[in-house]
Length: 335
Image: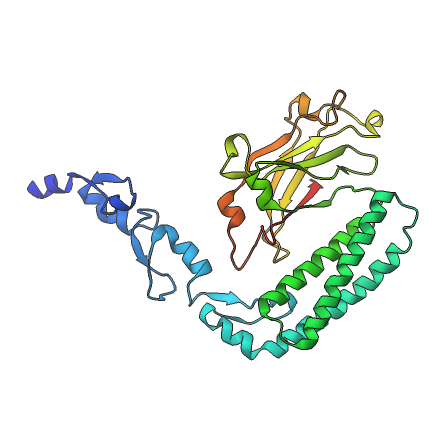
């Protein structure tokens, strides 16, 4: 009888001072502390048996970003290296396989040069397009050429660090993609949008608007708005993103209100995967967001106060970097 009464006593979690708010009968305290879905403040052994004790809530982050025994891909897997190793062996692998990695980069560079030659031929045929697109083509071509020349010089010196090689490779891939976008007379979905000076936009609590684009040829004219410091329910905690309908030259030929679904994708700048994507449907949009724009240049915005949290936006790991070089990239397309 006494034993049952003792076990039925109400107690707090032993990790109460760390922040755990659980309370219950003494009989269930061990189940709370030992269950993987239980106390997130309880210290447990690393699942890779690296010897470190981690609060359960930080265990996943530890394994993904810190654990020396976690098996990871080589930083050069995007250019052909298929070796997997424990995180603690990563530096040794880079030193031992530097020559192999450089050979892989040279092969990728050769493919890049071939694509560049094709792009230059295409640019030469676009002399009669609009002035704005012409300026964009020249800018992309000049920047891309400088990047390639810089990469060639550094490859010849054979002193490029692994991190710098990956950064230059990603930059080259982005400029190739942007050059193909610039080859179109009209900016139509899918489009790439680049937002620069992110920290300045965030500190100034500014509203940033992209260049206009079209949903399709002779389609709806739109633009993207980004609030780096957040808006409404996301102010101070999230990045806010909104789509805007604009007055367009083809509005008389289009059906109103707009009833399209879009995918807004925040691009991972170190890989062609792990992008952050959210769908935005105009099916339930208010008339002042989806209706034809008459009085002003833009309609009311339609989107997300809480597009992505600041924590996730600034989180950098081996799989993804959304914010890099103080800029972010969006890709917008119809679903």
